[in-house]
Length: 534
Ligand code: GLC
Image (cartoon, rainbow, N blue to C red; front, side, top):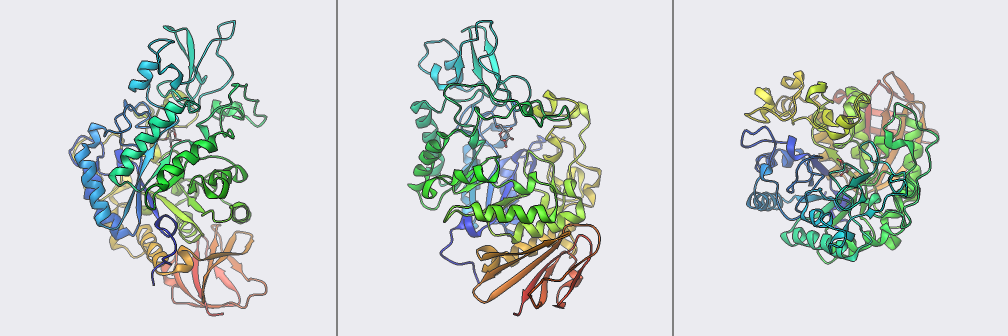
């Protein structure tokens, strides 16, 4: 049985994030590319994902590995040509899959022609495309705003005697989204890709796009500690999440609504009650404001259960949920909670209600790779040394097989691989019925077969000790998911429910086929999907 027709692909499907530098190199330069991705589409189809989101592939000086764009409608030559892109998009579509591009509208590269013009003189027509301000009388920065990547958010421009604002690197000046010309230019870039047929955008740092019009100082963060990134010293009350940002999101949404079934995903790190405002009024905002709850919170059954309930309760009518366990900015799930528990996390991600996004490599249980200090590439790591904030460990090349460099490249990989890649790789795990990859493939398959999982309702059951349990239901189908978020054995005896059913999928596959009733005893790190008979 296929998922209900009335749901759209981005509701019933599963998204897979590709970090293009690290997926597959096709020409031996040590950096992944578009043709490499194309060569691996068989794998993605076999795995059973429905859409790929590709981190930025546009021309860029690579100060922040592509999140500093110097041309919104081109392709970075190391990734390939526009013809390579077209070929990739066509093949993705031929396989019935979708492609989502990364859009970085908050800031450009400092080498983007717009910024070069803007900084050339105070009366340049593009001056107001960025956020320029006079110094305070003593010459210091206009306010106390900080850069996410360390230090002040303001950079002094000697030539024109003003500061410009950059929420990230000084090589990533923030655009002034209050300027209608900026809005139009970015919407035009979006249209360029929509006309080519891309299926949507993941919008980078959506909640940063508009800043306080009076540029007021941010208040101090009473919870700041020395071990935190310097950005955490202040609460970004005036530099992010301003009410006017929603007008911008609506404009983006109106544009994609001119096309068929395209999607807008917003990257937004905010508490749930703020996050859900990005669905807009009557759902005129982002289709999927990314929900990073599982990345940010402690791995604790009660807290997760409460947070899922809060999220389900906070969603606006018609707002579709989504879940994320990892991305290119955060430590990998298998490193955060351990390899065994990562199997339980996979079951959680792929059985909760809402669109899951899988981060490349998590499906084979890749862990963070320790990158020696003299090999660090990530500006966040380089700018704040000693705080262990480099994002390189979660961005290492995909491990395909046990040949040199795991089949990623014939050249020297841009980031080193772990010593374990000869055991942890796609080819080995494909053969192994107990592998993380097999578990993912089977979960994805079950999700496709069971509307209860892809689009069914969510019924919270309980969170007791380390156990998290819930049901997913569709018509007569009732699936009970029971997850042990701890490493030791535990027991689950749901009140008022006479359990009767059969285990249809388990993190420990030997459990499958087992009949269950009354009390369930669970191994540590165990997760079960049970088809209930009552
Ligand atoms: C987003 C991206 C991150 C990037 C930042 C600045 O958070 O995910 O990788 O560094 O925006 O563009």
